[in-house]
Structure formats: structure tokens, C-alpha cells
Length: 130
Image 1 (spheres, rainbow, N blue to C red):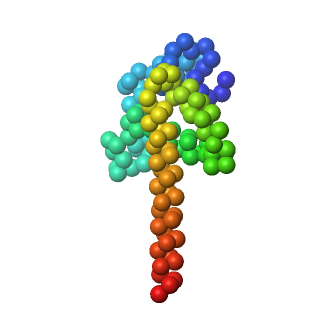
Image 2 (cartoon, rainbow, N blue to C red; image 1 turned 120 degrees about the vertical axis):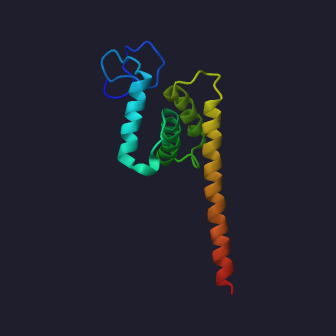
Image 3 (tube, helix red, strand yellow; image 1 turned 90 degrees about the vertical axis):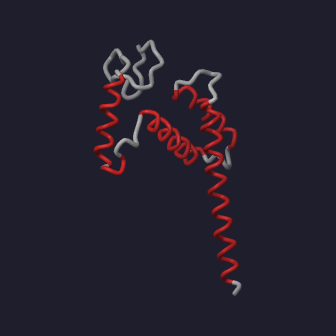
């Protein structure tokens, strides 16, 4: 299978090798990869990237792209399906609170964008009325 965790893997590790066994990467291997990523982005990212940050960033981007694809505003039922899929993708246990955190974070981000857009339109209207 191309990409993702190999089907034969008998573990729940997020960071695993791309070999046929899909063995878990060692902590030093993971941080070696992270340091290479930091090198790509330059000095301003030095010691600011970690596996934890990468996981958060992945899911922030994942929810935005899912929204673009499924249009949650017009298809709210698909949002819950994407949430369930995120649980599997993230490797969380069914009772994990993390998926609720990402869901709340995404909803808050969307609400903030609506608020900012409303404020901008109101200010534009107020300035045009002078």
C-alpha cells in the first residue's frame, strides 16, 4: 500500500517506517526528521517544531481541507463523519478528548473568520457613510 501505515503493522504508532513491517520509529529517528524539517524552514523555526506541533498542524490543515472538499456549512452531517475519521487517522482511543479539542478549535477558527468578516463589512459601511 502506498503511503500510510502498512496493513501488516500490529501497533498504533503514528510515526513508523515505510518498510513492509511498518516498525515504529525510534525517538531519535523522529527528532532527526524534525531537525531536517527545521533546516528547510530556516533559523526562525529552530527548536519550534516538534512531533507534537506537527500533529497539531496536520489536523488543523486536515480539517480545513476536508471543509473545502465537503462544504460543512451546506453539509453539516459530513462534519461528524470527518470527526469520526479523524479519530481513526489520529490513532486516538474512542474515549480520547483530543478529537473534541480539534473539533472545538476548528469551530472557533471558523467563527472567528465570520466575526472578522462582519466587522470589516461594518467598518467599510461606516466609512462609506461619511
